[in-house]
Length: 341
Ligand SMILES: C[S@@+](CC[C@H](N)C(=O)[O-])C[C@H]1O[C@@H](n2cnc3c(N)ncnc32)[C@H](O)[C@@H]1O
Image 1 (cartoon, rainbow, N blue to C red):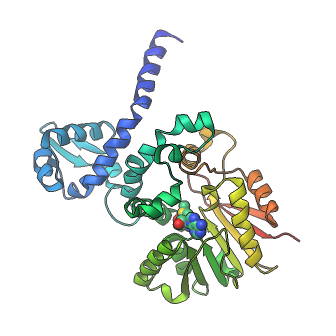
Image 2: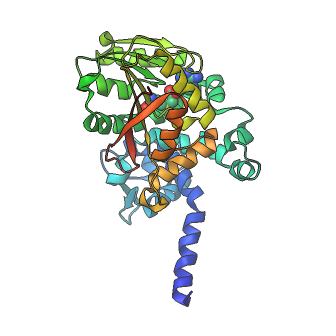
């Protein structure tokens, strides 16, 4: 490596190593609501500190750190203004505030267990917290709520991609298995007024979905059911939807979920799996690779290639018919499967 190249590489590596600081700067900004506090125009750290409950000197330095990353700009006189990037942390539909909060809080402690997990083959989250991810969320409602807020922000952005890419004209009655707060389902019901649905999730989450869809007026075409998708899922539908569910599980558990869906579907029914399809080379879709690492760290689970999905589906009696790419940067796709004959 030439001398100049080496110093550029050293700077780049130092920046990568300091990624932990960037995660925490964004976490502080998200927790304090800095983006909303800056929404009406530039302000100084002294001015902001009282409103957001912060130490003015420390806040000024955090804002300078955020200026390095392009989240805010500084005017040289102590004033800070929100950029388009920073505005993504404002509250509202599709906000990235929730993802910033879980990364800097819940996930940050978990990722400290990654080395142990890579050495031992366990799960980083369990090394760090001593409990499985979803069990922890059940026992710690604040973390459960932060996680669902994060999911909700992502799901709002993804739902539009899904309904634009896949034609729901042939669907009549749909069960959204592990439907979360119902954001994807709301987009489907909005795009396909002839569809009726059941949202199925853990009981507490199904209740949150009921509240959310009732507020949007879509609950009239939807039932909400709590339960365990390893035991049984509601029957009587022609279509089963697993959106961002299989990636939470290793192959054995994923096959069990697919099998309970297979038991409930009629022979002419269908399954829609909404998940990332991994690229051949990591650099083709960095967002897909990062999501795969989240799955490894939190759940000992994984994203999959199309060929891996095909094999997994076949193990549970499904035939993969086609993969419809949504065009999202992370490779999110709709995989359509039919009961195997
Ligand atoms: C990653 S979220 C996906 C949510 C939603 N489908 C989406 O696309 O945004 C996975 C969902 O699976 C649910 N889940 C986890 N374990 C479950 C179980 N044993 N039975 C039913 N749902 C479960 C979680 O509560 C969560 O809402």
